[in-house]
Image (cartoon, rainbow, N blue to C red; front, top):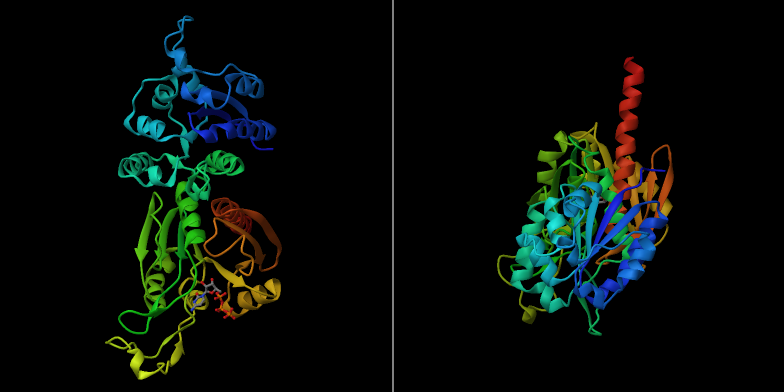
Length: 408
Ligand code: CTP
């Protein structure tokens, strides 16, 4: 059982505050110690008594700043007690106060005295989330290393569905626990590819696929947050670059292959999560194909298989491929592992609508050479990324242990 964490949960006043008790319960069920700090408006959505009962500790309210008659600077001692501080939900106002460092209540004052991992889980309507001031505050927080957990797309309190829903309590708990692994990949060089590639037919059309890049970006975010020197080669996607990641944008399979060729030889781990085009048009027309001319006669040719090529350019790296399948998962994964000389193939069933392409979630089975397969059940892609990197870490450590035994 890993060491329990001291978690300070900050609750601000939005409807998602009703999920704070669930976060506390899950954390405590997993052995962690929890204390809560609430803003004044949070009390309109969840009672302090509920959180006190669940944490078995008084809740820190706004008035603690003034009513501190023990002589102890409470915000200092609480900041020192906590290993992790997580603000969930973080409303627009609380996000702004955290970003600006407005020490006008106990929670934000404590966040300023706190030097450990700070996480925020925003919750608001799509319109509010997309507003420039909110995005500005989010960017400022991320720049300082604050971990954003969500928000996610889903049903909102307004009855609509959209971006802005608070991440699910279990995903917030996973993010809190993930802070424990901070730095365990320090000094490791990891190369990840993500997203689709686009192969142009003419100046306006291309062949591509439905990859959103989310899995690869989650892997890159996770690797970088754990200290790895992380390069991310991405096809065209609309995702922000995760903090600490060196991103290289490409369009075609050939461009991706060229950039992998440059970066793979210096990498200890190469994860090919990109959905690389298998075929491209033999010629790209320089002018738009007109419909008057009837359906174009498309001639396609194969692209280079980047994962297979890694055997030559990165023979010592741990080489991990992905396989998006609609049928025989294991058979196909093992065939690809053999044909492409990969050490692992991470396979998922893309015929399921609740996981895979475009979804926030995934469920994968990691097939490994000479080791049992591991299935990572349906969970947020960032969490899958975390578990996958745990396996990578084990493998790297194992390899080193073997080398140490042999040389000793
Ligand atoms: N891959 C690659 N270069 C390509 C095509 C695929 O490096 N030109 C990598 C992918 O990034 C992935 C793995 O190979 O890690 C498997 O990709 P997938 O598309 O599932 O396999 P295919 O080789 O296309 O096999 P099939 O068409 O039989 O499914």
